[in-house]
Amino acid sequence: MSQGPLMPKATAVWLVENTSLAFEQIADFCKLHPLEVKGIADGEVAAGIKGLDPITTGQLTRDEIEKAQKSPNYCLKVAVSKVKLPEVKRTTKGPRYTPLSRRQDRPNAILWLLRNHPELKDAQIIRLVGTTKSTIQQIRERTHWNSGSLQPMDPVTLGLCTQIDLDFEVQRAAKDRPAAVAADAGASLLPAEVSTAPEAEPEERDEHRHGSRGEERLDADSVFAKLKGMRRPEDDDED
Image (cartoon, rainbow, N blue to C red; front, side):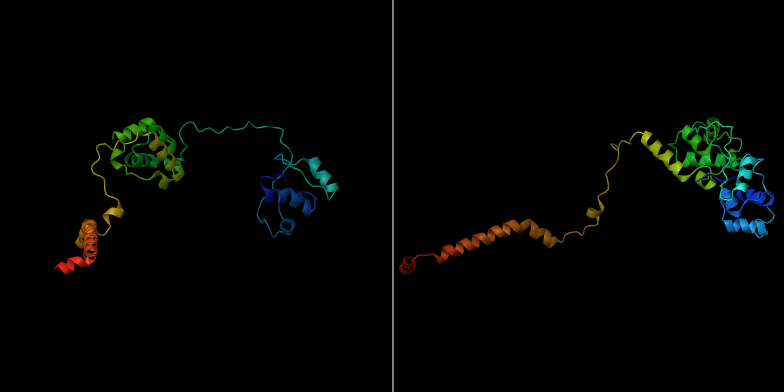
């Protein structure tokens, strides 16, 4: 699919007013619907829009227009620019660009980051809010010229950075920070399953403790009962 003109409706207005091209040809070139081009010709659409000359802007050539006027089935093609602009390479180096309307909020955002995320390095804060290392140092040491009026404010709420960027820098700082040693930590809390388990009743504990002895006693009684039933008849006669 070919690329249309920069200002399609303004270009369509000019082509309708200055050429004898068919509505379908203009619609195809400007990426509009033929009925919309017909509405432009009838004055029902794009009222008040000034026409844009595609020849002056280098989007069409006069020869291309004349060729299309002679052949109603011919499709106009956008002129290829002879001037090649160098490709702009995107770089991530340097501080983030901050709009002028947001620059006054940067000290408040820096103060918020220093208080809520002290693990962040100065380079990370610079990437997030687009400030300088000296400004961070001044706010940290309370030597900033407006230190008395600063209030910590979330840079995401201020629009200085996105939540994704902030979470990324915080996670990176957490990975760089050495793991905390838990040697001096006090007694740890018991798991919830243990602390919330119902305490066993005294009888259940006694039965559990003396259960083995009771079983041994029952076994001994049964043995003596069997022995008593096995007495010989001669012992009864002697008595």
